[in-house]
Every structure is written in structure tokens, then in C-alpha cells.
Length: 433
Ligand SMILES: O=C(O)C1=C[C@@H](OP(=O)(O)O)[C@@H](O)[C@H](O)C1
Ligand SMILES: C=C(OP(=O)(O)O)C(=O)O
Image (tube, rainbow, N blue to C red; front, side, top):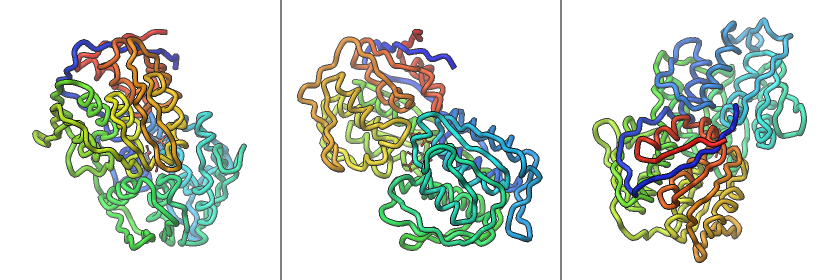
């Protein structure tokens, strides 16, 4: 796809309107894997437009079109396609990469699973080790511990007890939990050390539960027995991570009245915590009429410490809002940001420097220094192939007369309608070559 930059301008510091957000990328990716494992019992409603989810849907469709996932006498899964090698390119979709690393060995095919240049730098070793212990045969095509990987046919379950590190990515744990009920001996997952991004694991278990799969979770052990999926429809909620950019817009505006239909206070998405975080910036969230209304009132910002460990995808949104408002907050729980679409800490540091703000790393604690903050008349934002860099910085157009954002198409990963939605509340955007 040809890349374009986008120049954003905004008249006035008000934001009023209704924005229908697309389905949650995280929920949708889980729903698609569950659907694929369920032998037609589970359906997905409100499929997300996120490019990562659309790609996962298409891959699953073409990979499992001609086969049912059945368990043979020898514990392996039956397939007629063991001899052909197919290559699946997952592009930049990290969650899909991890989920497929656990799912594809069950197809009993020979598959090379690869991704974008950045994907080849995002670690997968912890999950591959777990899959190997379970009985999968997986080789690395290039560098040990990183995609591309070659998945061989012949999966036979060797054990049901797996120990796994919890502090690198919760996606490894989710990937294993999603396939657990399909494994002949089930799965007992012993999580070692701290569990990062815990709400995402809770989301996985809640969605499995909706699909009839029961689990136990005692201390650090999550157990799922071999069991069948129930007939159900999984409804994908709108994306709370996408909603966070609307909270940021409200926070940087003098006045805001926004309605986001379909979002509920009892969401499965941990990123719904943005309502609590943004209350500190004068944003009130009222849940009614089947959605959430945001309003803005001017009030001093008091909260100084934000822990992002349970909501890492909100980190860029909140840090940029603080920097834009000159609020010198401290952030913790940013460790996993370095292995996402880009090194998000470095990307934030580089781009915030353009408004004179420093994000200073002291061990596990990051502090914003706004003493030399200076909002220019014109600014160029680099996005590093990271949708959240583009969307987290876009609200700055409320305070900066002309904001050019690199690679407008990058937002498609999770929120393709982002730029057109901005126009609904009075942003003007012009694509430039
Ligand atoms: O399971 C998921 O859907 C996700 C888990 C999180 O990753 P980590 O567990 O790697 O922090 C999050 O950052 C990612 O965008 C989506
Ligand atoms: C980290 C993200 O996605 P993924 O890991 O699925 O690439 C994200 O959407 O912020």
C-alpha cells in the first residue's frame, strides 16, 4: 500500500459528536480462534474492521477450509495436507502471530509462519518452548526465539503441565489457553513470576467461558480440562483502546460532548480503565442509551502516578496528554512497551522532544519533565509503523495549528476509520504524498 502523510488542522477547541468505534481487535482475535476451534458451534458477531483481525479471519478461513479439527486415536489431529508447505505472512499483527503459533500446530500441516520486519524482532521463544513441550515440532527459520517459524505436522500431546513466564507478554498465555480445551489432556498452566497485562488473560477466560469452556485459576495455576465448545455467538464489543483517543481529544479540548455507542461499563476490555484515568483530566463518563457520553470540565489535575502494567496500550495516549498539558506525571509498568510495534518508549522520547518534553527513564520508573515544554506552530510526527503513535499524537492538533503525521495508513492495524472519524468532530485532514 502506498504511504501518505496526513496534515491535521483543527479550528476551535471544542469536540462534539457521535463516533461509532469498530470492534475490539483483542476480543475479535480471540473470538476468531475460538470460532475456528469450535467445529462450527461458535459464531462471531460485530467482526472488527481492524486490519489485524481481518487478516486473521482470512488466514483461518483459508487454512481450515478443507478440514475439521478432529482428534485421532493417537492423540494427533487428522489432516490430509501434511506434505505441502504453506507460508502465512501475518504482517505486523502481534496478537495474531502469537495465537497462530499455538493454533497452527493443531492443524497437522507444514506451515511457515512469518511476519513484518518488526515482527521478526518481537520475541516468540517462550511460546515456542511451551508448544514444543506440549508436543509440537517447531523450528526457527532465521534467528532462535523469533519469527519466522516452521511448524511441522505430527502434533501429539506429551504433557498437560506447562510452566511459563508471565512478565514478557500475556499473549503467550492467552494463546495457550485458547487451544487448551482442544488438547486431549487439557492444560495446566503454571505462571512464573509477575503476570503482565492481566486483564487480557481475564478477557480470554471470560470469552472461553461464554463459549462453554470452564477453567480454574488458583494462585498462579490456570487449568482447563479437555472439553467441548457450546453453541454460542460471541459479540465483539467496540474497542476501548480506540476510545482512549477520544478521551484524549476531550482532555485537550476546552469543551467536549462526545457519544461513543456500544461501550459499556462492564466491558471485558481492561482498557475501559481509561474512564478512571481520564476522570483526573476532567472527563466525566456517563453510561446511558447503550453507550458512553464524555463531557469535559476544567479542573486541576492532581494525580501524579500512573501504572500502565494492566493497560499498556493506553500508555502512549496518557503520556501524550500529560505532556501536552504540561502535567509532570510519573509512569510505571512500561517494560513491555519496548517489544511492541516499535520500541514505544524510544518513539515517545523522540517525538515528545519535539515539544520540549522529556520522558526520563529511571529503572522501572519514567518521569515527564515539562520544564522546557514549547508547543510549536507546526510539527511533524514520525510514527515508526505504530498505529498508536499516530493516534496518540493526533489530538495534539487541537493545540498545534498544523500537525503532519507520518504514514496515515498505519492506523488501519486497529482503527481504519480514525482519520474520517476525526473529521466528524471538526478536524480537517489532508493527505500529502
Ligand atoms: O491479548 C491481547 O489482545 C493483547 C495483549 C497486550 O499485549 P501484551 O500481553 O504483550 O502486553 C496488548 O498490548 C496487545 O495490544 C493486545
Ligand atoms: C501491541 C499491540 O498489538 P499487537 O501486539 O497485536 O501487535 C497494540 O495493538 O498496541
